[in-house]
Image (cartoon, rainbow over all chains, first blue to last red; front, side):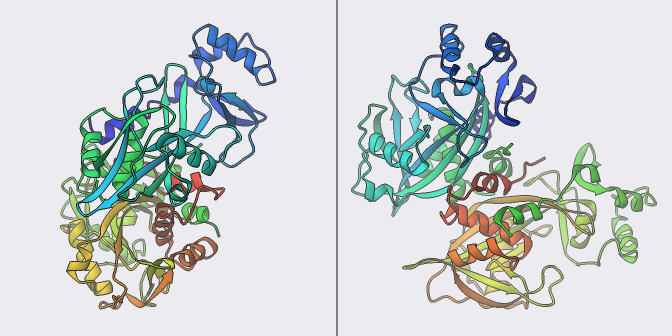
Length: 265
Length: 265
């Protein structure tokens, strides 16, 4: 593996395999050709009947199953949603989804340390893989800050007075073909300095254990292996670039810098 | 003005106005159609005769004048150069050029402060505009670190033991049509914490004066005006994103994040 391999693994989208999903003149998703065929039976997809359509697609195995968590479908970030969709159907329709990822860090005498979680073995996506201290999708009707506060409490028992110091540090953008369709993802990244006496503690069963690891070791593990959840690699590579842990001596430096944020469209 | 206006101003490249300049099967630059016509007289441009060609183009006013500073022409960053070219001719041939930009910062009780320089009135490019504490082009045969150390000493009298703490924090990539041709630029960005008792002092006549400005004020000035050198706006926008001074509440947040690094090709 290499840093670039992880970036490429998250950017497997090939334009010729998808057609734009348009609503009211606005492109809101990307449909793979086989998914378009599967939708032909439903003449009025985007109505109150959307749930019935998804149910049929779940029955056929085209969508894994209901996640019972709504995502918003909006023409762009910050705009009011056009409608909402079960999280499990987001990739089928190639709807852009938004998440938050928090790098929990300590600045020790020996350098930077990162709190890394191991995902529970019963997670649907990437079981047992390593993860950021806090991460989660932004659901319909929930703001970014609200999501960060909620996930920080559930995933790492981070108190409100600590998470309020999280610093927004940018976003990662990638587009990845999946079994169901397309992940068109935006991850808002945050850094948070946590005190030396704080230890994260999971409360919702999604993280099996936490370890404090020297950031250099985390970055080397990302580069050399496949221990982290696919998109967490991007968040850590971005962290490494911003904190001087990947330097311009790296032969792929510019490809890495440019590769973390695919152009918006 | 807005953050996005500055990004657009640095990305005026339109593919249909240029053709690739190829050498030994590798694309090394971009030639505008009028510049191609002007080169037709010289059947063997890329040889020892390149200087004679540039001289003729200077005489015709297609290239402003000799800068007496060589830039390297390489297939990509980190690779050995194929040849060298006077800095004044780089845009004519649309050769990728590399520079260093240093954000000189203090973490005061009231927040972040940035050291901002005002460019001398006799600078060829962007006279009197505001600039980073240190910035400069990477010349042929000079490494990135060497350039940073040299420019830091010349432009701001930064001693070696201070500049050695500069942290590489990424790169900005933009492509901008100019009178001469094309700026295809990569700016390596660095952050440096400078002590409260340090005041930069210019020694090479390129910066007329330095001011320590609250970073929030710098960012607002970038957003609302045109006081800074065109590409310095990008470096400061990137600084603001990394330090939480531009947040996801900003309606153009994702366009800004994605717009600072055009894809490499």
